[in-house]
Length: 104
Image 1 (cartoon, rainbow, N blue to C red):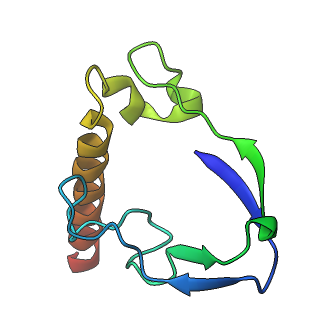
Image 2: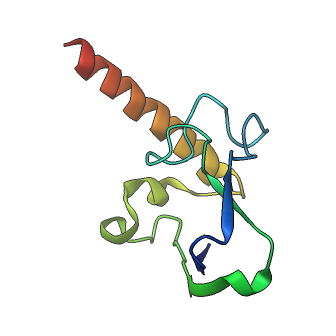
């Protein structure tokens, strides 16, 4: 993942385009900070308005440090989209727990 700095006022917010695709179900938020798709993507016209400021790396697998990356990453043992599947399951479980707490 690339962390980027964007020139203020140089972008237009747009709804995310990842909805209802084969890798992420539309009923699960991609990020807890973005419950929907509104404002999830920023569109820029000029390459000079964006600067890459960091390369963000996450380690996966049984040797990943759960204190750094969280427990979920230690369960990834296989191919490319297993992490996505685990994130979806985890998000649904957390949402279910939140609904149960609200009902109590």
